[in-house]
Amino acid sequence: MTMLRDLLTPFQSDFSDTRLGRERSHWFIFTLLAVIVPFTSSMSSNLLRSLQTLFGLNVNARRFYLFMASTHLAWDRLWPIAWNLIPSPWSTGA
Image 1 (cartoon, rainbow, N blue to C red):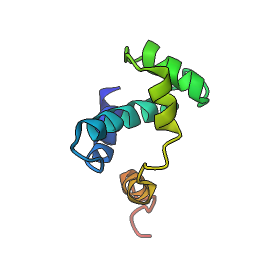
Image 2 (image 1 turned 90 degrees about the horizontal axis):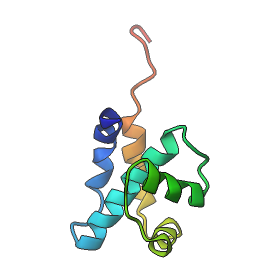
Image 3 (image 1 turned 90 degrees about the vertical axis):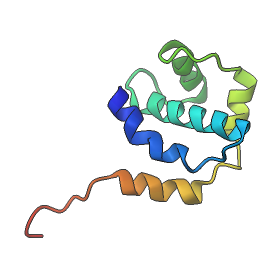
């Protein structure tokens, strides 16, 4: 699990350094981990349950749902980070 967390830390650098930015970064990483771990479906209610059960996070449900519905996540900056984390599929000689 720590290997996955270490792979996802580049995402954290894209959030602001304010208290709210650090909180969103923390939730974003753990939400991605909850999606990756084959514990439950990716429905928001199940993700919240995963964050609380698997990772022991004390997350206020209202604030979590507001985070999930946020239009302020900078997907235009987060997608390139995701694509750059994927190793090149090319083999030698290609």
